[in-house]
Image 1 (cartoon, rainbow, N blue to C red):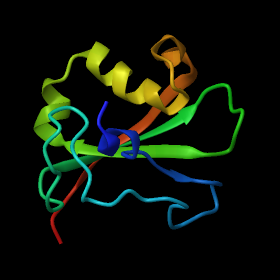
Image 2: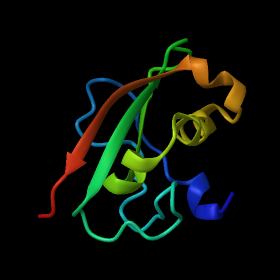
Image 3: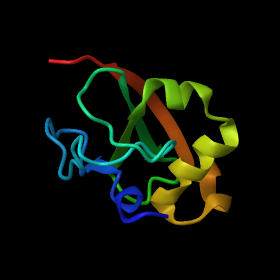
Image 4: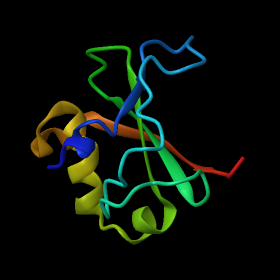
Length: 104
């Protein structure tokens, strides 16, 4: 796993936050193709929360829309389970939403 992939996840510490506590920005690579995200055109943000609710954080990551659309369920689970460092714990993740971001 590349260093950028380790830092693809942003998060909010609580539901009341309007800005993330950590935002990796758009300079990171797409977790599916490992190419730079670039501008906001064609980018989707996927929001996740642990189902076991051991913390109040909600997480998100960004990817190219076409990469996510073409990814298999196993590829998505592999990326999303990195939040808790173990693919076998993917059942503890709940995908809250996938939002398409438009260029500004």
